[in-house]
Picture (cartoon, one colour):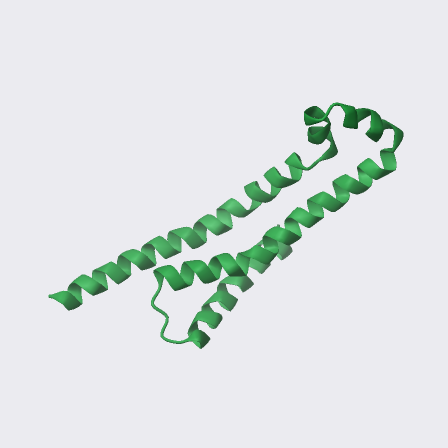
Amino acid sequence: FKIKRRSSRGKGNALIGRLLVASVFFGFFPIVIGISSILSVHSLTQVVPSLEDWTLEHDNFAALWDGLMGTSALSLMMDFVPEILFVIFTKFYRMRSGVKLQYKIQRWYFFFIVTFVLLV
């Protein structure tokens, strides 16, 4: 009886793990776009009104800021994806070795990169 109970518990954890991996795929773009829009010069001037005068005088810096902050937010989020996958797979899947864990992370990260870098 305990064996069935453990296997159903493992299936439930695997289902939660799959849902979390799917949430990483579907939640990636909204998070990156949200961070980029918060860090844009336009939204920062709404929070700090004195910044608007400075950006009008230094419009090249404002364009540089917008370009760098959007790219930096994307790079930062891309760097965290393997770590997020590592946490999901160690918590919700039973990995018998570190090699299998690394392979699973590598496989899912490959699909992630193909989806968001090549296709989108």
